[in-house]
Image (cartoon, rainbow, N blue to C red; front, side):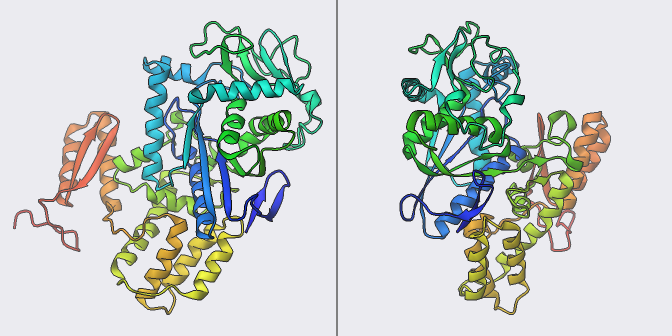
Length: 467
């Protein structure tokens, strides 16, 4: 198996530390707000990695953190704390915010058929681990104290800028906590932050009452559950220049070596035309919102699979609609084909070659459609594609009736006129939706479509009403 290792800037053969046993750590969400479809791209990427490793016969241990403390609005530990910002916005405590949005994240994991990590570890439950790691780094001579807190001394680590190809001489102070007159080097980052009396979440430590810097939690928790050296560390490309660079430094400061052998990074999801994904631009949706609109969230998973994790993708409702059609077609084919076939050896061999080459999922999707057009029997086609679905994760074995696109269009149109207060047009569209055999339920932030069990719909879309 070959994977792209960011540390080497190339695809390289994957060799686990222990034969057939793989430890993976993934940077998880900061639970101060909903995780939207763009956020979930990363977890889909690493779900495919986990599924691939398991398919190839590896035993995996997947660890993911939940950042529920200490992550400021800048990766450089500057600005307002994200948890406190979310709490103020909703009139909740930081603990209530964390619980609420961790739940939303886990529900998104379920809706997108992402494998549950073996270990989900919360930063607030591992404060002692973070303190012990910081103490070790300090004892090894890699940290010093200022009025702001305990800082990592990047001057003691000659290769600090190597991982991200950083030019340290061009780095500048980025904000309140970073503008520290006692800081030795511009790149020196905080392991533990003190003297912030207005910060809500604080703990006692050898350096004073305070809270951890963002970067320390991942090194502390990854090594607690996977050991001082493990196989794969994953995250977004935005983690390369700051967060993962600092994690590597912490590993050397504490243990004298990198914690992870391989570093894998997913690219970003952008809006239509390359726009940044933003609620204000109307291009941000959650998996839950798709479900409420009558769209199977796995249609988004299908769209994700048509791109490579290192390439990223452009998302819009139009691109989702384009992906939804082949996904529903594939589900229908699987439902129509009989069971009891055999897995084709040639297609299986090509499938293994593709997933073993840095997770070439777009080519796997193309291979699936090649199977559908092949001369194999329907039974063998079904069995061969279901074998591939062990990695694809599209839940193809379970027949599921999807809401047709024209009904969703009517529902979206109704929602638009309803927001304008055009109640007569909204009622007319509701009746059209009912005539097609669906019930629309209004929600505070949208709608949900479900099949009207009292109405029988023919293949032509005709109903039994009035007969």
